[in-house]
Each structure stands twice: as C-alpha cells, then as structure tokens.
Length: 78
Image (cartoon, rainbow, N blue to C red; front, top):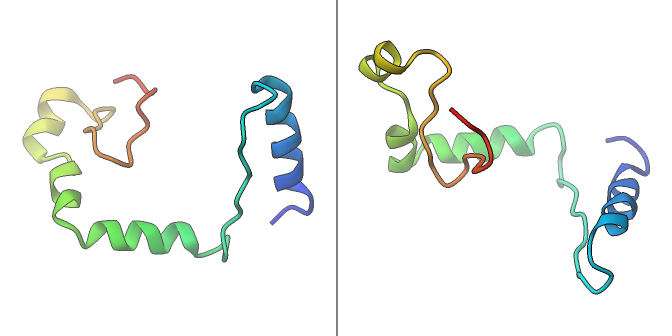
C-alpha cells in the first residue's frame, strides 16, 4: 500500500540477482484482506489440522515449536 514500494523492491533485488534472472514483484489485489483470505482458505483444509501444534507437542517442545507445512518458512529454525 506504499506508493512505489513494489518498484523499489524490484530495483533493489535486481542489484543482488544475476543480470539475466527474470522476475517481477506482484502486489496483492487487496493488500488489506488477501493475507486473511489465504489463511482462511488454508484453515479449511485437512493440511491445516496437521500443521497445528497439539497440546502434547506444545508441552513437550514449548511455545516456540512450529511444524513444517507447505506454507512454512524453510529457513526458520526451531
């Protein structure tokens, strides 16, 4: 929602990416609601229940524990 933000991100990424790397920054159609809508759709899937931490897992691993799922950040560390 910040004017020129997508262009700035694209310009700064081009500095560190190989010159022939083709990419474009895509902005959300509705930046205020799209994230919520995506999470809402995910919450209706069977995968969501497998991604949730159970009480037993919480007690065993602690509040910082996160399960891996297709929307998880693969670079984060537990």
